[in-house]
Length: 507
Ligand code: MLC
Ligand code: AMP
Image (cartoon, rainbow, N blue to C red):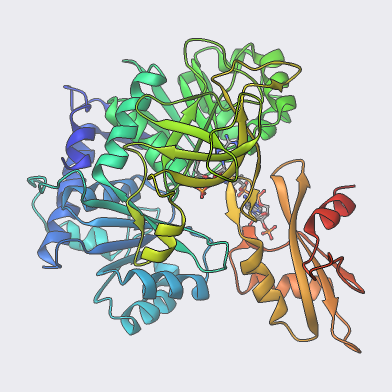
């Protein structure tokens, strides 16, 4: 069944009620949402693009950007969201790899994005801005506001989400209508969504968390969203008394706690705070509870699996644990021989279930590598069931994540693969080699840092290197600090010992 139809089943009977309220005082009813979505779906269908076509989108967050996502589903195409921080080299790779039939970008980026898109064979490039302008809306305005949702089977693709690869190149995780609808339905029950809920939405909508967890949650429950363009702590605090649910990466909670205007009274109507995408420090979990009386619900997910484990809504929410496998999802922790570990024994986390993606776009070998022979997806995360966390015993069926086997940094909820950044640094004049690591950061959880060795006789300037990188890659991937050193520590096999660098620079 088309995911749009599953979401639509949850829309409220009263289509004149408010679906979205924006930071600048605009109200969109459910009827507005449906009509705008239908007009965009008519526009897409009218292009005559084939079934399975990708619609790539790199635009600022706006209600219309959400409608474009819904329109893509409704018209039966495949949605491909792209982080607004991505620059030309990154966008070029995604477009060449995914070969979208349609590209939608901000008008300020139209000249370079369209050049890349046309060169790669994309025939339709539209603009969409966050002030209700752009060629997409101009063209959609002439369309009918009725559209019959195109039938799609459970196994058809609904979206492709690019996740960076450990070998440098990004992989497109193919998510089906069933992956996304099953997860949304399970979470609606698991987190006790109810009538009257209002979601405070400040996450970006080009990743799983903001789009498939937060927005789907409100849509499938027919709940209003207060739609903020980005994380702005003052705006969160201002709108929280009218909200009941909020979802954020740990930085949301760190920033709220650092703001003197954030008090228990501000949370008076809130029934649920969800955290995920990166580890929530127990210190944040505990301080939040002391200040507000509210227990943050931490959950665990990834682009390839949507949500897989969550602390319960009813029942103990344990600091330092991500909770229990969701209904219908199987999670196991295994040793190097794929044998299940005992309680409190650390191993690799693997998952099976209707939420698990179909594979990586045009990368059958990579897909095969990431699954065990008996069909479990290897998350690349390391953890254990039970044990101790936050100074207390964790129930034996609760999962704790203790690390990652993949060389990955998560900064403010965004994934950064060291290999990719190292390849950019190594290409710079005067650089012999580099090692990129994550170091603890009070705001982002982890921050990207690079340790660089210069070529003999070369003189490197770390500030100039950072400035140069800012022109090449997404800002969140740029090292916050670059240290120039004489050499990198290596083991007997000649491999760089990042654990030693992490220890050294954490201090
Ligand atoms: C912005 N910057 C970051 C950054 N975000 N640097 C490192 N890590 C980040 N996450 C850069 C800015 O470009 C800027 O650079 C400088 O850091 C300071 O920016 P800021 O103004 O403080 O940042 P802000 O705009 O407030 O953004 C921070 C943030 C944002 C945490 C609100 O990054 C964010 O919304 N993160 C959420 C990501 C997310 O949705 N992840 C879910 C993935 S899905 P300069 O050079 O200009 O100073 C997933 C699966 C799952 O993981 O389980 O959910
Ligand atoms: P992404 O590829 O952007 O979907 O990121 C997924 C990764 O984020 C997971 O594999 C985990 O490493 C990490 N992650 C998500 N939620 C949590 C959490 N609650 N605690 C720790 N790590 C998390």
